[in-house]
Amino acid sequence: MNTLLDQLISELINVTKKYSENDDITVGIPQFTENNLKIQFHFADKNGLDITFNAIKSVENSL
Image 1: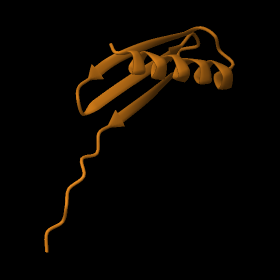
Image 2: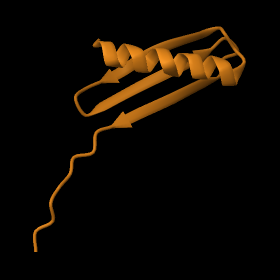
Image 3: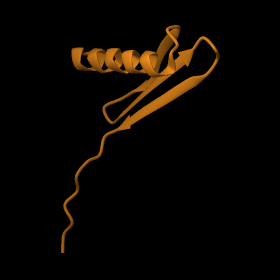
């Protein structure tokens, strides 16, 4: 993984820990492509959080 992705995941973990008040969090990345990134957070109390990022390509409309 590249440095920016590592930084993103680190920041998301810190925010998730802060607001969930749960320090026992594991992270998985089941999908990582050029156009899609899915990050899963699993908490010790069996709850979970999925975050998906999709690339949006700009398309010019022709008249």
